[in-house]
Image (cartoon, rainbow, N blue to C red; front, side, top):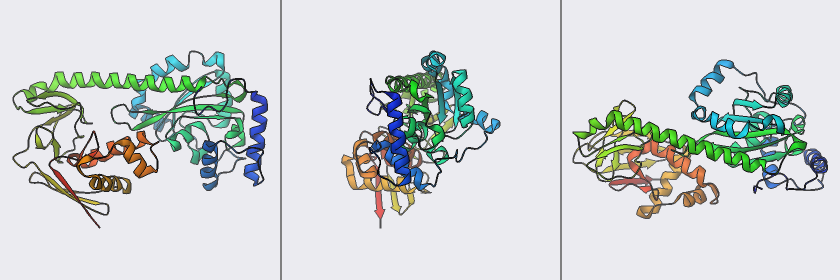
Length: 390
């Protein structure tokens, strides 16, 4: 049984559903509930009430756009592993009376498969492909709440905010890009509330981990193809690297490096241990990275959200998001010792429980600032200086 499970083995589901309905109605009417909602549910209800949603309606559902659904499916890396998810989750869907639902990071349902009978009920609820299923659109639900909490979520019966969803259970797990840590979407199983099995949460989490492992294998295959097609470009230019768009190393010549460097950007220099200051060159499927010259330092100044970076190769200026500026200030204050993902989680989110989110934010930051930030631990890169003004 998972730590976030909505029920424990042996729970009388009918009785528990009635108890939760009493809690739901009391909380939303402002009276004293017989029990407090679970903290996860309480947080979500508070967010949803703050958004002004109505528990008696179907709120913000919009008719799906078939063309947009096709575009989103084509753009999602989850398409590479949807068959793996089907293999784990849909084989028993008809017998167990549930649906497998997969969304993108915006909460838009990309795939929905499973019991034909349950699909008909879901259609009446607007729980269909192409519909956005976030807390802001449909209230407390496992998909939207998993997105909001950046964690697996299971909800049962009246733990959902909307009354029309009280007949359902749903259990969801976020799915991340194993290369970057970025959120790709959510894997969910949903069905009639009184059919919830306590082991479903573990099944859904396992399917998400399997999909992430399969995505990693696809990534390795892509690096193999890049290596085969581009290693000749680096052969006569040692020392040099061939990397993909995220900085993963497909080939190296004349230099020993880790598996990954900062994600390259056109015209933006980056510092690579053993190579010094480099200016990435675009090649088919990736980048060729080699030393740019004799200058081995990058000087940066952060003023508010404005980051000015100076080098002999290519000075540049970028406006950061408030979160990215905050991360850079923490790294500057930490000095050469740097910060772990857990340290950043505590500094940015207030506790160490958001390590995955911290890593994802750092991945996005490194795509923007390249040469300035090194990893393991996160720190201002060797050969770079960062001054924080104000």
